[in-house]
Length: 228
Image 1: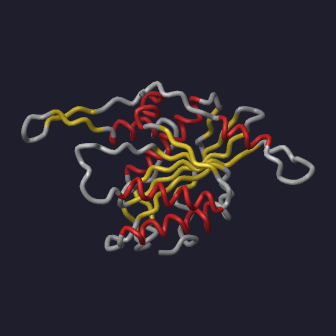
Image 2: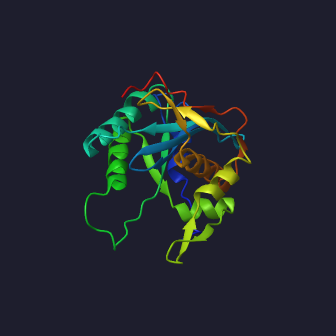
């Protein structure tokens, strides 16, 4: 699974997209990379120049959900963020999400992440934007990220990827220790979701053979644009 081949056909099709009767050729696209969890969605955006094989990571951040929000409130919030912010302000042409696999041993209850991805795909469809996915094993393999193994109280091995991912992402860009919450407007510790979204972004671009520029990434510049 770690060697899964990424399919770029849908992205490359954007280059031939007919925007009007004159068939204007699209050479640059803006791609939104998402890491979804039940409490927060990390994102990273890259402007990709297919002609010169260059990519610039322009912004990244985290969208927290209210601590007392119902599941449907979270889905609605993310739906509107895609339709009213990422589409209009960031001019997103394509979305890549981390693929979620259901654990057959944990089938009880509602799975927020896959339902959230459904809301994201529905929002993308509103503007004709395609959504593709990448396995966590794949992006970690591309970046050479290996799990940090520790022992729990029962002596059982625990595999953890958060810190190794942070270390790898910091090789490319500097992520603020604290960022402003879109919910409380107060500063809080940058979540691991931001690092994961950036890692997904960088790995996807790296596998595609793009020269990546992460020097001027703006963090949480959505503050003031997306309201709770």
